[in-house]
Length: 272
Image (tube, rainbow, N blue to C red; front, top):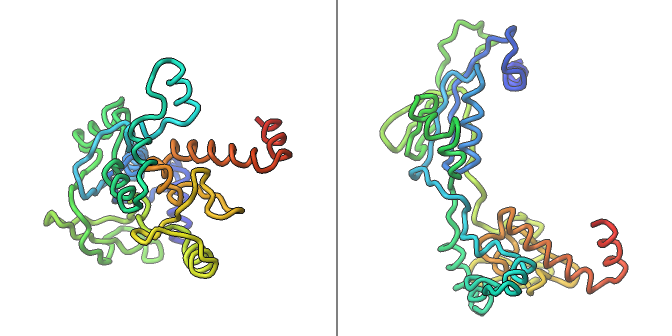
């Protein structure tokens, strides 16, 4: 029953027959957290919205320098136009034979948890929602969560326990829901499939420093396994996890697939 009420309120925020209201805490300081908090501002049933982030809100257009996003096609056009071609950052990264150094470069060049200028200072942006009090922003960490009895006019069958969050800033807040927008973990993704089956049993090579795959320039980890995303970051660099990195990975994988299988090459061309 409670889940049905909650879902109905979320899916039909303008349903006048449903008087369910709630307060919510969004945990995170990046663009996903900002988007969700701003979305909730327009939900009439969200009576109080808290945004909790460990660090100050950081405004940046991309989470890496644009040099890390330039693909081979763009580099070729740059070179033909008198530019430097492949950016210096990418060249130095690929020339390094030390996986530990590559990991350090990735850590230094990637700025996680950022908000674009449009989301922060655009029309009805996050900055203005905080100034108006539509969103309560807390620079803090959540130290403790405990359930408390809900003081509500609803019947016992309709009421639900609330949560009290103790923050490192010394304050406490009470909410009905907690939404996590804390990004991806830094450890190797893929769970037991990668760690047990591919690394330990199949013996595929990984960096002794960080445990991530060591692949060739075509992103081949094995003659029949390509990688992308976080698994390709020791080859692609700090943009591997974002959309620009997906484009870089696709470019290399398609190029290699075409050279390996002429039939596949024709199929790829026909689908383009």
